[in-house]
Length: 397
Image 1 (cartoon, rainbow, N blue to C red):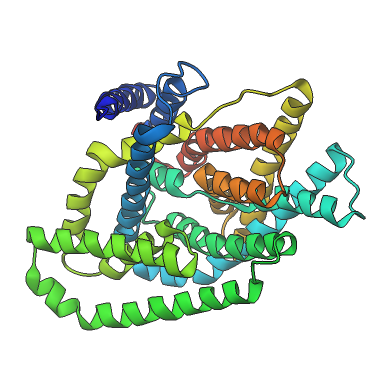
Image 2 (cartoon, rainbow, N blue to C red):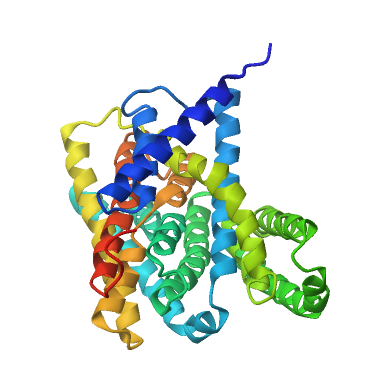
């Protein structure tokens, strides 16, 4: 017999995210903060009303995945391509240092706190892997916050987006190298080869989309234009993940970039936005909180969680901020870029899961990782609102 429980869950998620989003705006915080809190309240950490187990949970997770894909597709459509091109080098430097510093910070945190014997190769890999988790960046929360603040198209916003995409690539390389040392079935060279082929593939698509620009614009603001654009986004997201091992959201972002300069780019963004904000995005933001479970935390793990949280925040702010400062950004702009890269989100959870499968992360360390994910995801929009306000951003959203 079919279960229609998912319909009730979806309705409750939409109501809760909207209500708490409005409350967040009342207290001058981005609405996304309320949506995240809604998920935490509904999930196992508070009410335990909604879980992601079983068929219903699988459906909610797939809906959430579409939500983050649409979010990044819209971010690509909103990107100022000229600004992005002018900020490619700063984005790369910020991403590079923003990977190295958290990697070192996580390694030292685990090694010193648990007195890990780094002369033991297996123990050393475990310490390194904690650092690998901290290198992850989930930009979806930042994207939504920057959009609410009207800063997505600016110099800082485009640098954060560029750095996040590059961070994703660098993170895959680091993750692959570390896991391959534990799992001999993974070949680092083949992964690096796939990454290079991916950029060749994207280059070919950019060339083809340039040639097809006139045809796209001739189609004009018709429903089929939006439908075909969404199909292109989903196909590129699938191909990125399935054949190249690159995150699907990266493919969605590139799809948006290829269409952002066309005359119909704004029309496509509006049409995608209707489906995204009405349905898919609220489910995505709530799902992050619903995934949260903090059971099994003892005093030792709680202290380690707080240590890891401090390291997670500081290493991204210092690492990415330092990279931006080296590229002659102002101190405030550098701070904004660093803060924008704090959120770990679902990316860190995916990396942690991979480490668990490879034996690089113990089950009891999942709770501290989840806590870091929750807090960094919640505070990123709050901190962004604070540092952006200093630049003269609107005081109400």
